[in-house]
Amino acid sequence: MSDPKKILVTGGAGYIGSHTVSVLKESGYMPVVFDNFSQGHKTAVSCKTIQGDLKNKSDIVDVLSSDSFSGVIHFAAFALAGESMKQPGEYFKNNILGGVNLLDAMKETDVNAIVFSSTCAIYGFPDELPVTELAPQNPVSVYGESKKMFEKILDWYDQLFAIKSVRLRYFNASGAALDGSNGEWHEPETHILPIAIEVAAGKRDHFTIFGDDYNTKDGTNVRDYIHVLDLADAHIKALEYIWKENKSNAFNLGTGKGYSNKEILDMVKTVSRKEVPVVVGPRREGDPDAIFADNTKAKSELGWKPKYSDLKTIVESAWKWQSTHPNGFEKK
Image 1 (cartoon, rainbow, N blue to C red):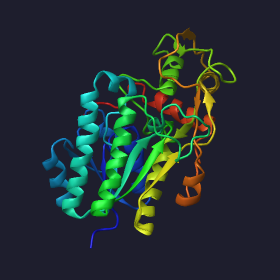
Image 2 (image 1 turned 180 degrees about the vertical axis):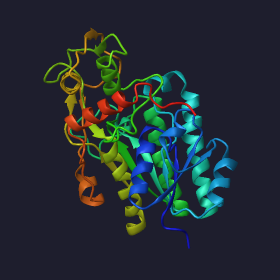
Image 3 (image 1 turned 90 degrees about the vertical axis):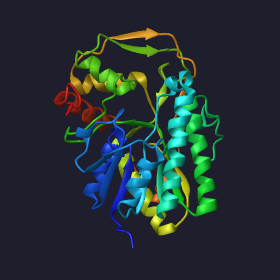
């Protein structure tokens, strides 16, 4: 019988993965990280780590056959929508081929539970707000399409091989560990909150708002920001859901409300007590006015609810991370 506490975390050295590893440990589980470290950071995790690449099936077969795992949490993926439109082949190879190799390795080693890091990008431009799990799936990027495709592949592996999956469709992951020990660090950075914080910290000259004439309360984009620790908690609840219910499912992870770009900037200024100079640029192609989640299903079926996703906590934790780690993760 497999150890009920050993969990393989692919991409576990990345932003959301590393926070989930910490929460797994706090919850009594034994995470093992599998990562190629192309984007993740070894210093972000303090557990067993194995370097490998999902595109090499033997790498993941070796890991899963070397121990008894009760489940997999699958983060490993390329995740930049803009980049995906310039490098579609790389996104399909990494996000689809890598994922199929993982599923085949799970099949060969009798690991039958997987939590998949999906995205609200599978919905594209939603017709109705808030977005439910039954909303039409019309991705507008290769990244979103790759996640939609892999969700369908998971359905087939459930039907054919009884590998149960929970697909967690995140909205905007944000924030950092409350003690400042871990946080968001991408090179280059593309997300609004860390960029705004870098401006407040004097590392950038200004923040660019891409369009201030959207059909929102202040003319700037509205997004649903969910604290990374709330996302981490949802992954554990999703694994426990599979073990208890023995079935697959999909859940939106968001707060059910949105904040505008200007509201984000105002909170950064309040928390940091610094100015954030703003330049208004042209709209970016493919940016909807607003998008936010209906999280009713996750609350009722997973027993999950966000605890840290008020805007002040999100920004305070991100600012603490930036203040204590101005150079991000030190190389080892």
